[in-house]
Amino acid sequence: MSDAHGQHPYRVYWITWALLLVITVAMLAAESFHLPRIFLVVFLVAFMMVKAVMIGGNFMHLRFEKSNLGIMVLCGIMVTSLILFAFIAPEAKSVLEKTVR
Amino acid sequence: MTDAHAAVMESHWGGGAQPFGASWQKTMMWIFIVTDALLFSGLLCGYGYLRMASPVPWPETARVFSIPFIALMTFILISSSATMGTAVTAARLGDRKKAFLNLCLTIFGGLCFLGCQAYEWSHMIHEGARLTTNPWGAPQFGASFFVLTGFHGTHVFSGLVILSITAIRSALGKTPAQGVEMAGLYWHFVDLVWVFIFTLFYLLPS
Image (cartoon, rainbow over all chains, first blue to last red; front, side):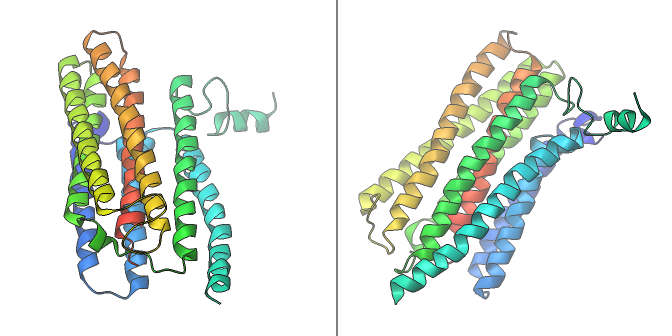
């Protein structure tokens, strides 16, 4: 177990808070560099996931729960969303091609 | 009972009275959070569809919104999540005064966030953004903006109602630590959804 149950019970929240802010500032700063779009998208989505894991793990205590709770939550949300998006994205592309033509 | 059966029962998937090692209240809260997350997942995928299928260019968000203002809203929400976490731990340690103080700070953060959102909405409406039209580009932009931030704002509002009730009841000693923890789970979830909306709606380049 980590800080959440140790001598400094509140520290984990404020470390997470500081890291979340640093990541948010990094994401905003990345916007101002004129990176190729694909790099920027990958960077933003990757750090979005890092932030989500930090909020889920530290703020919502999934790190300290029995691991199958975290697996249920993560799989339930991620797999469904990815399947949904995987079917939607090609459809959107084909609709766009038909509209433009 | 066979050895294999005993081995399964001892594993993480063994089930029994508490299959997730959490009380039924917390398990149900998590199931609710998963379903609510799927609501937002559907909305975000719908927004992705509209944006990808739009023949008219999507508006550049940096020109439509004041990104520093959106960053301030993010800062407020992340800070309120940190005070919420502090309140949950304080409640668990039996420090009722600290829990109440941090719950009040969380409520204050949530109110500031809602105030910012109300300001942003009225600004957008004043500029001419509607559900079906907007002055900047693809007409679907308006619907995406109002539906995504509207659903999120409604969640913030209901979170504030839950937090207010929890703060009063926990100050009176009527809510156990677990009640504060579950209000906290909901509040962190609202923060989590904002992370996705902030990145996918406000930051993703055109």
